[in-house]
Image 1 (tube, rainbow, N blue to C red):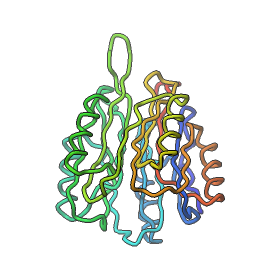
Image 2 (image 1 turned 120 degrees about the vertical axis):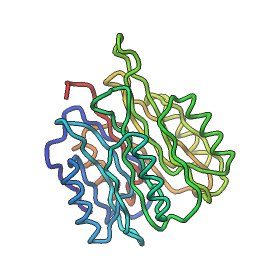
Image 3 (image 1 turned 120 degrees about the horizontal axis):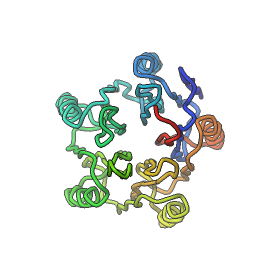
Length: 285
């Protein structure tokens, strides 16, 4: 397994979390902290080796977006990475374009619009070979609206394949932030039970996840963010019908700590299924 090195040192406030599941992660490549042009070059290099992105996360530092991603061997490595980090309208247009070409969204990541802390930008990973069924992604919204939309999608027979969250400015006068959430849903993924673990601090999230795990459910996707600049909030979707393999979700940690944890998990027979990042508000970028 190869760890991609950052072009610049990870910012002091960067925090990373991961979801590992039983499997061979020895051929995965974890790439961290590359700005867009260098990340695209790395993606193209790895594509020549038959590896494609399976999970992506975005954080802003040094005045630019930086990308963390997991690459792994795939039987269909014709993945397309759209690093638009665009508005919802731009993202939706790109998604329709890719959908019409037979590609489906494999992962989505949110980042904050540098020109407006009230808005988010969207980054997507589209892949071939994921079927030709219906797929829907909704713009980021409050937790209550997100749950209502999730119920609607569930009743349509759709199931989530990825999700993302981020904190945006809520009250300018108070300088307070709120979480917003998005997910990508697809049909043809079975009819297993589905639960969302609400945004929680670690001491509440862990027992909730453990309860679902003991009931035979497994995590489909998860995300982390912070609304107060320091405390991580964890949110996830768990589902039945995925079997009962072992899995482990990490608490938030610094990049070097995360790399060490990833190496340990791979040695124990796990593969990195999902990665999430956020930046603590330690200084103004």
